[in-house]
Amino acid sequence: MTDHQRTNVHTPSQRPGPIRRIRQVIEYRELLGNLTRKELKVKYKNSVLGFLWSLLNPLLYLIVFSLVFQEILRAQVPLFGVFLLSGLVAWNLFLGGLTGATGSIVSNAPLVQKVWFPREILALASIGAALVHFFLQLLVLFGALLVFQHAPAWGYLPALVLALAVLLTLTTAIGVALSAINVYLRDTQHLLELVLLAWFWLTAIVYPIRLVTDRLGEWDWVALLNPMIPIVLTFQRVIYNPAVEDNILPEEPLSWYLRNLSFVGIGALLALWGALVIFGRLEDDLGEEI
Image 1 (tube, rainbow, N blue to C red):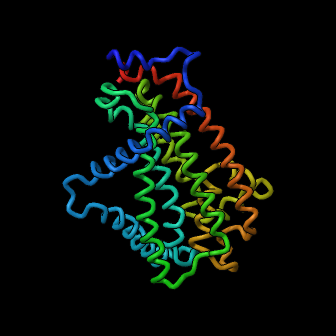
Image 2: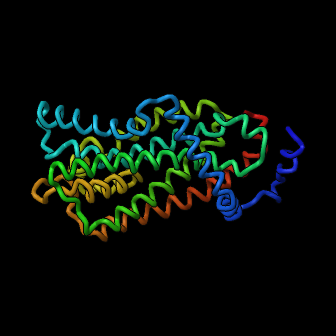
Image 3: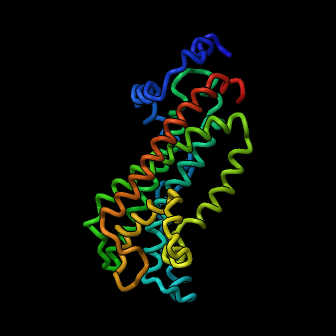
C-alpha cells in the first residue's frame, strides 16, 4: 500500500457517509466521463464496425424472434419482435450495467492501486457505458415502430422517464455493492450470471404478463414483487403499446404504472443507501485484496 493510499484509509468514525460519497462522485464527474468513454473504447477496440454492433444486436433480435415466434411458432402476440425488444432494452441495460459494475474494480486493479479517487466511479462508468448502448438500441426499436407504422403510447411517456430513472437507481445500488464484494469473493461474478439468468425468465419479457397473473389469480400482485416487472411493463406499455383487445398488458391507467414504479424507486433508493454503506466498509483494503 502506498503512502497516499494509507492517508485515505478511514477508521469507522472517519468513513464518509452516503451523502458525502455522492458529493465526491459529483466532484469527480469529469473522471467519470473519461472512464465511461474508456469503457466504450475498450469494448470496440480494433473493431471495424464499432458502435454499429450495438445496433446490429437488437436488429438481429427483432428479425429472428419475429420470424421464429410469429411465423413459425405462431405466438399469439402481434408484432412479437417489437414486444420482445421493448422489454429487452430495459433488461439489457440492467444486465450490462450490473455485470460490468460487478467486475469493474477487479478489472481496473492497476488504477485502484496507484491513485486515490472515489472507487464507486468505476462501477458508475460501467453503468454509463451500458446506458449509451441502451440509447443506441432504442434507435433500432423506434426505427422498427416507423417501419411497422405502430405508434407508442405517448400519454404514458412520463412513466417511461420514471422507469428509466428507477432502473438506473436499482442497477447502481446492486452494482456498487457487488463491485466491492466481488473483490473479496471472486465467485460473486459467476453466481451473478446464474441469478440473472433465472431473473430474466422470471420477468415477463419473452412472454406476456397475463400468463403469470392468470395463474396467480387473486394473488397476481405477487408478480409485482419482482422489481424488474413494473419497469419492463412500463417499457412495454409505452413502446409496444398493444391494442386493448389483444389482452397482453394490464389495461391500467397511467397512475397505476407510476404507483408501482414509485414503490420500486423507494426500495431502490434504500438499497443504494445500503450499498454505499457496504462499499464504505469494504473499500479500505480493496487495493491489497486485488
